[in-house]
Length: 264
Image (tube, rainbow, N blue to C red; front, side, top):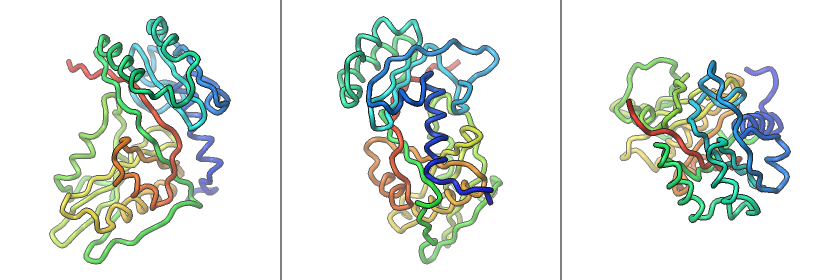
C-alpha cells in the first residue's frame, strides 16, 4: 500500500504538474480563467518526451491545447505562431473549441504530416472517491502482471493507442467468463506518477457490470502502486463516461493535440 492516500490534493498536484510541463506554462496560467498562447520550448535532443510530462514522443512541430475548465493554454512551436497566435488571441474558453478553429488547426497541421485528435475529456480518481464493484454473477476478476490467457479482445488495447504513445502496459485486471477471458482493463505507466487505464470487453458481454468491476479493480491496483489513475474517453463515448463516473472518476482536463501519423 502507499504511504499516504492519493487524495484529491495529490491528484490535482500531479495533473497540474504534468500539464504545465507539456504546455510549457505555469500552473497559474492553467487556472486563472484566461486563454494563453504559449510558445513551446526547444526540442531536447537527449530526450524523446517533454521533461516533466508524460512519456509520449514529442512531435515536431508541436501543437497542444488544454483546458482544466477555466480558461486554457494553447501551446505551439515557434514556426506555427504566425497563424496560431491570431487564431487564439482574445478568445475565451468555449471559443477555443469552436469547430472553425479546430478545422483550421487540422488543415494547418496536415501540412506537417500530423493528424489532430480531440477534443478529448480526461477523467481522474482519488482514493476517497473510488467506488468498488464486485464481478457480476458468472464472472471473476483476476489481477495479472503477465500476458498469459490473452483473449482477442485484449489486442484492442494495444491498437487503441495514438501515435507517440509508446508506454507499455504494467499490469491488468482480467475478466473471466465460463469460456475463458472475455475482457481486460490494463494500465500504462505514462509517467512515474500517472497511470492510464485502458478497457476492452467482448461486445456480447457488455452491459452486465463488467466495465465497472474491471475499472474499480484496476484503479485500486493503481493506487496500491502509488500512482494516480486517469481514464480517457472520446467526446461521444457516453458508455465509457458512465463507467468512469460510476467508479468515482471526475473530469479533470480536456485535450486537443496533433501527432505525426506518417510511417517509415
